[in-house]
Length: 230
Image (tube, rainbow, N blue to C red; front, side, top):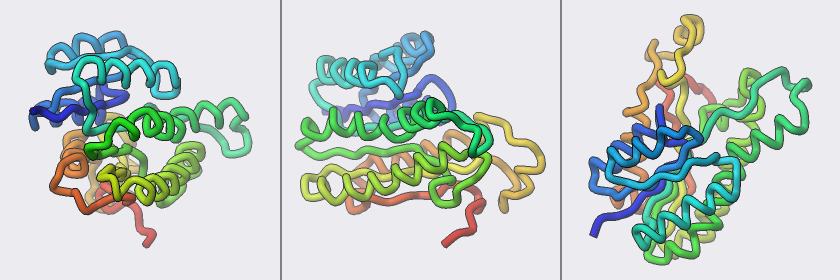
């Protein structure tokens, strides 16, 4: 019987690449995106779609409910999301911080509550985070803070659910070419290039699969050597 995967923010970039790779590896797919084109994209992949935001609890509930109604199970969740608001550190408003935490931290917490009790056969949750979780950047202050908190949450989740066969890990991309970086930024990357969504998807597939069944609670940088911290 095919395994079932949920992918959020799945209409383009890393999210869509993950959905494509999962289907290529014989997963049934359920996809979420704010874009109306998600229905056609999911249909092309033989899956189902819900239009909505990762920052909205009701949309996430509709996605999880639709997945179980259609497939009767969920084995993998890939929590991809949009970019939190950016700006000068002390000029960001309370609303900016709330929006960012809804997008980049609460999305995972909410989905985890929706799926964990129904993953009693085991499963893998993979969160697409950012290199800023390891090396915070003033260019992305809300993202850096929210994703660092996500790393802590992942450790707690892994501790609680590892004995039940439910794993959670984070993928921390650097500059991926779904968004073009300027020349000065690229010069800071030891590999002197941006990563590709497919490269991120390959790591996600590994962490979703049984090949990584002894790995949980970890952060995996995929950044071309950008982060220097130990």
